[in-house]
Length: 460
Image (tube, rainbow, N blue to C red; front, side, top):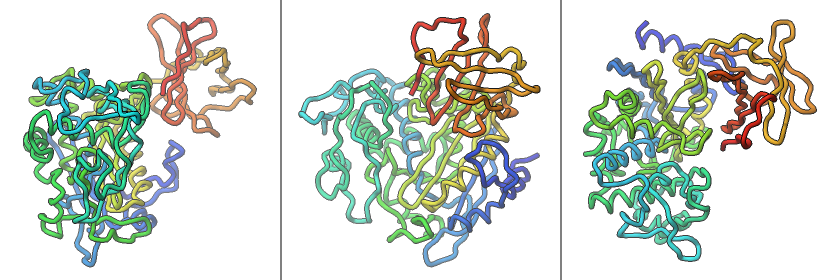
């Protein structure tokens, strides 16, 4: 079935109850969800590495007019900007302009990162890309037109800036902490290293080579495009953003304007690169872009990673004042889906679209025989987990907890019926299955009680 027929049908029956992780009979059409959450406009695109693309717009751009959203309507891409900026940074690594593991002080000339005592910490380009540099915890809300500070002022916390100065506040490399400040430093670093304005650099490095013709980091773009081709942002409840949108001097972190079709082009190119088929980025760097930088974590170099068995997808989500969005690729099927809304209340709607894409495109894996999974597993500090088979169903019991019947998913995962807990059994070459617990983005490994692991395995 072609994408158009397939997705028109899928968007007519979206699951309202996506948080459970299981299909629900409680479904609604996209138009119903837009009404329920007061989302004025939605744009969606689906593409394949072979070049096939389907895209459509729903609802209106907002403001005083009732202009329909189309596939060509530009939206704020929010934090997907980081994903695109990271691709550009890796192209500079590939050309030798940057090195992932070199101290950023080697490249910054117009501003220097310091800690609270004024000292320069040792931070690498890789740590900026992976949000592991330990920089100030910042979310950028944007500015009204004519009141935006410069990037330098954002870094310094001066002028009309509404965020604190960017500082090193955690031990670099010690942990993951998502913060837009990492990408503000990366933006300044790329500008200093190339002596080129950021929007121009990204246009020549990434946007033009990928034919992302409706995308730009230039904050004047929404003023320059025809008004009917710009989605105006909305607060929760449908209240419009004064002026239509905010200006984001922190372009690498949150300043891209784009369309779902353009965002697909990036994710599909990364998928080609991982397969060694890209003319832009080599396989090793593309693989780095999909490799969690903290073992068991969910973020790599500018990319949100879900590499669970049967759920492999890579990409990024985003939220700015007035907008929400996501763009993901399911590499085992060579398919990417991107969706953008002009509302802060778009998350639930987007979650329903993404859950539909997961069920459609996530890799299916064969479940191991139940008997191969049974036995006692030990988590950290000898914490016991017992897996048994009762009446043909797998049961799970942990220390001091009553046994429960696990809910089997068709992709080989098991869900706890009462907790936000996902269980996976991973076969090994010549050993019994290893049990993985996934809770709130954290993976923990429990091994058969007969094994004696060298150390606990707990990954943030």
